[in-house]
Image (cartoon, rainbow, N blue to C red; front, side, top):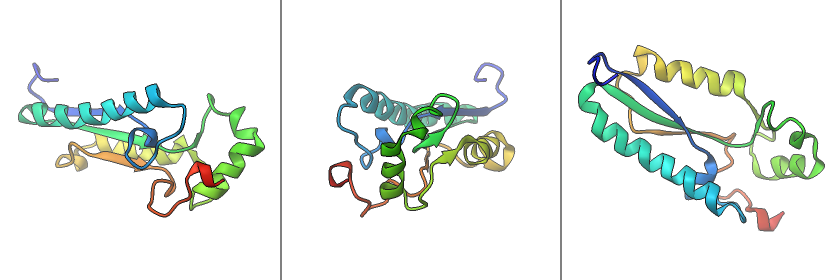
Length: 134
């Protein structure tokens, strides 16, 4: 993208676990890696902006997917969703994530860069119970 001098869009995938509001016990490596993705996103946006390359990150919460399908059937996880997600449901990649990706790669987001987009049904809002209160 940089060498072609045509601009573009980079979309990194992080997690709410990488945010200051979304820590999970036992996830030190995962949370640290995702926090690193967020920092990398911001620095890349600073460095690549001169080349008209936008860099953003998406931080999903609890989502249904092929990978998490079996896990989503567990009663304990449904209980976590009911108690910690204000929308009382887990997300689905389509349309929640795919629509955001479409926006970020489109020219209509030409002035959007260096952002961490949180897509979590409100999980990381202040006042939501933490895991220890479940």
